[in-house]
Length: 183
Image 1 (cartoon, helix red, strand yellow):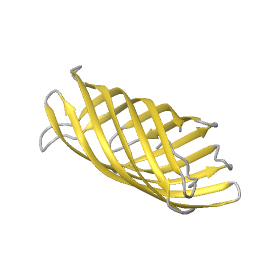
Image 2 (cartoon, helix red, strand yellow):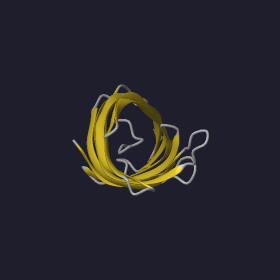
Image 3 (spheres, rainbow, N blue to C red):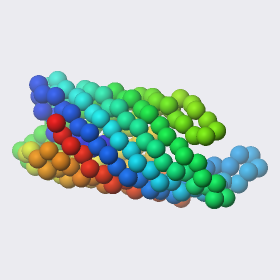
């Protein structure tokens, strides 16, 4: 979510971003199988285009993908990837130098691994708080595919830097660092 809580009415919002992600997680075991741990390293990128319908509503789409290496406990390594397409709605408001928004996104894509190609339902919901006018710092808290996440975006005139941490069931933990550009 390389975005701001600020909604600019009657204007187009276009952003591209790229990030590096590392993480450790756990794949649940079956009835008699024990869970197995994994490490992942990868890169992701996205393009977002949205339109500020009014001062409180923005609608748009996000398109992206990623590629990475998935390393199991057994040292087995696999290349994995995905392509996704999501529609989003951002509902929010502002007071002086403070912006707030709820961003809801839902979509689908394709997941690839050497042993599998399958549909990939995806989505997220983020509560966003922004500071400054124009917004210089955005903090967000939300769920992505039911996994909790917390992030911060530092915005400059056209560029932004962002960091996100997320964690899931078991001892899963992921860190994403990236940069973006606003058109």
